[in-house]
Length: 282
Image 1 (spheres, rainbow, N blue to C red):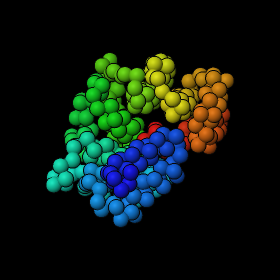
Image 2 (cartoon, rainbow, N blue to C red):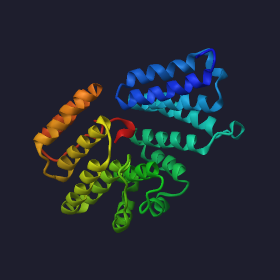
Image 3 (tube, rainbow, N blue to C red):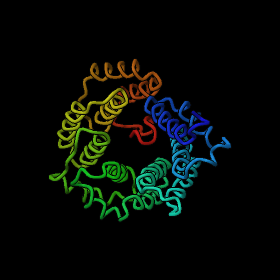
Image 4 (spheres, helix red, strand yellow):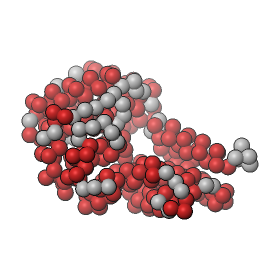
């Protein structure tokens, strides 16, 4: 098809890269995306597909924890998406800007992470809490919000405001709500581990309702580890190990991550390594 429909081929490869990323086969995804930028045919792609390719390349670097190159490619993609002459929908820009904000947070450039997240929200964090805390709208913005509130020390003063809205919190059985609920539970745990355990019970119910595959099971194993190591929740070791066993069978590329989770789960004390899962999977 390459000679017949260049843009269709590019679009198919972009989606194939997503498939490999979902299988944690990051090297294969990187090979697919990066070859396009070096191909002379790249110059003949539509601006939208050029931006998608650059955004996908940025993701490959983010998964590899190469934060600087990831930032470079996310910025290049954003420049294409925001060029008014290209007439590209805001959605493409929004997705890439969310990725950029997550990458910067992983890089621990906390002041910049705050600034870029507010570019996503188009308002301050204070206003974003009012906008997102009690609605099911814009879940990926919500995930970015709670991950920053929990991980970004420059925003620790706003945790209590978010927690004050607990009675109006909502969720749906769909990704990334399981991640939002994880950070909600962890923020509650800072002040009240007993209440956090009750909130974690809601998270396990949510996982039971989500019709997800092995990637979601891996996120559940991660959440089980966090609940035990940070909040002292009781987790059945046999259930946890059986979950990891199924993940290794169905998602072999994630075996090393499963092993890291198992070691962290068994380690003494209440600690948690946030680098076990990469990029936007945490």
